[in-house]
Length: 617
Image (cartoon, rainbow, N blue to C red; front, side, top):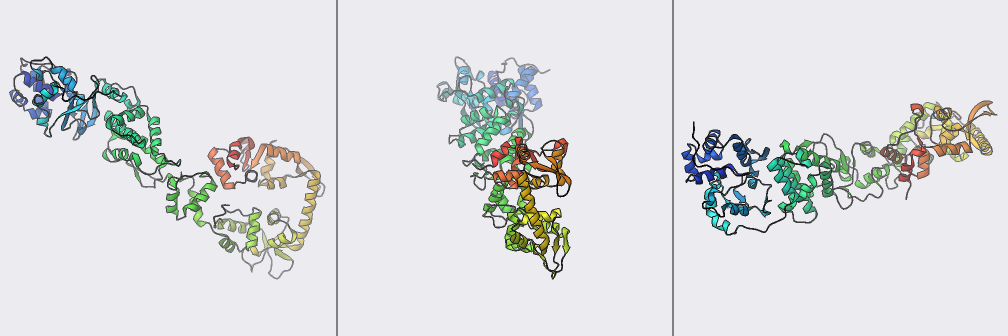
């Protein structure tokens, strides 16, 4: 059995292995190399923590297992090629092993004063070697560099190094001005000494937490125009990060806010943070919690394209567009895009953000971006439809064809598909009319001759009140014709019916429904049958049949309770697309009696926020 040395000392609190080994060598009247040889090992093997060498030293020094474990925990034990376990936490080696050795001169002087052999009593604390520690809490004194050595065997020869500076230590030449400890200092000391942490950072590995506090604090100080020195940065970062993810996200929001209300879409003050999390420790899982918080924030504000890497995560699809990125991808000018998106509700009319910071939800507005390049001007629309300029204007004026946008500066507002769909609807209703057959004229000529809006003529065709013909030798809309005599009779009857309606103070349900933009003969009837809106069933004296009619009071009651897209548009002047976007953004759903979908009818009581948003101020 290996005998315990006659002369031994107890390890001090927080003392490191090299420090204790040096004191044992001094106590036994030799240097560290000679002492190691006397033990049958080498000093290098002690520093490398060779298990056999450590066991031999511990046995000869009389160290019980718990003291040996504590000694090594304050020294740091290798846990991989570039990792060390320190106080139960994993650190990168360079955070604990540095050519520059620091200490508190007050602590060392207190240990040496009054001692006949001061080197036997002067100890190096393990926390002094930790990169995140820069202050002795006991003396409120900064840790100061004592010596610098590149070779560990020289650097960790503690007694030899202390002997060379002992006079200066005792005379106070290493002393500096004291400083006030921060909450960060107390937090780190408590976590290292007792493993206790009452902040949110207890959920994060210590080295990652220390590093992130430093990075975040420095970024915040730079943003404020203040000097980002180490102590101030760590204290500032800790004050934020210790309160958890919401607090961190708030700081990130401050760091990325631009003066125009948008977000900075370059790295800016976050560059060191992103470089550390995304490059230096890209594959380090201990930084995963902080990486996720930062990545989530950036994904919410940066217009990143699919396939871009953000802190080790490849974006599967684009989430945000800016005006600039959307313009580059679609080839559409930013002014045109801005007009479309503003009208559609993606932007406020007063949005003054710069193009690169004017962002919007890419998926929500992708259909609009896809549609814009296919829009055409009036000349192309007329050619596609086979219509004259006057005919196109009449159809637009009566709402038969609605341009995709009403922005006056946009020269290509039309969807050809709308025009072709309209023509297809007419085609299905038309009968062939030979080009030489007299008594037929175009819808536009009926409109001009009788003063009846083109929209009303088309409505009469759709209800079967007027027959529609098609001249096979004329392409498009201009080839559809109406019988002149039938049109004249229809106009006379329409005038009589309107007069009767006005005299009786009401109108038929079908006429009112169409005026409110409600399509489908059963849609409005469902409201009446369910008792949701008043109407009266009366005898039509001409047809001798019962029909539903609405008085002015009934109409007022409907308007008081309900509104449709047509009514909202008339009341606010907003385009249907803008209205739909506002309804969707506020989560307002259509009225569905008994779960039945009866179209775009809304309860007016639900529409207050929409109307308030759409009415110009």
